[in-house]
Length: 248
Image (cartoon, rainbow, N blue to C red; front, side, top):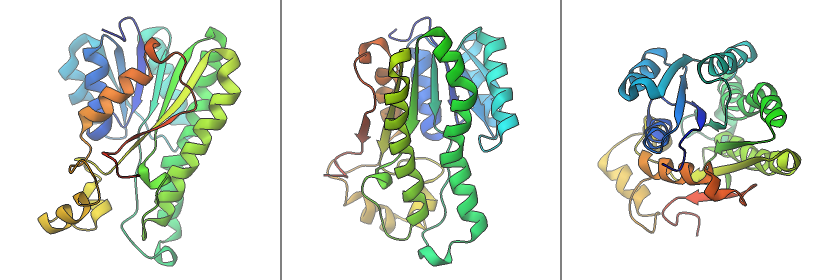
């Protein structure tokens, strides 16, 4: 029960890594706002947890939607201890010059601008309370970029740098900021990373991971619950690789 009495917002919490984080947070005693652009999915995930979770529709790329999410969290819990910026998208594996401007704008809006927007509306609350933990779900792509995912790689590299910059600025206010860097996992985005989800493509990718498997939602949940708990009170500005050795 390392998160007992804590409250958390998890964006993209309806499924995938976000769903794994929601499940683990609730198992560790937290109350969670499951925020997702897929409102039906968020409601389903929240219903699984009963009174421990509340669903919220959010488009993390839009300021008014993020502000409404914070208001919903304040109304549900009274305060917010933890923010997990998990919502993210990618473009299909494509030569960098062939990614459309619309795709580029959407990837940067969801993966990068969202961190700015959540900070804008949630950081003042945490600074006022002199406590808080923010966790950004980045990627091994931000540390060891793969060809043909150039602008996705760049968005995750941005997130890692933002994490460190936020950590330095917010440390005097008792707010910690860390990142997780998973390798591709068993999530709805897997097909987008592989280009096509076939046994052959899976085997080819897994061959690059020393531990020999994809990341699972529970792997991210376990790491997230530690970094957002008081046990990690001396850890800030870290970008923890949850990648089975992929970046070695």
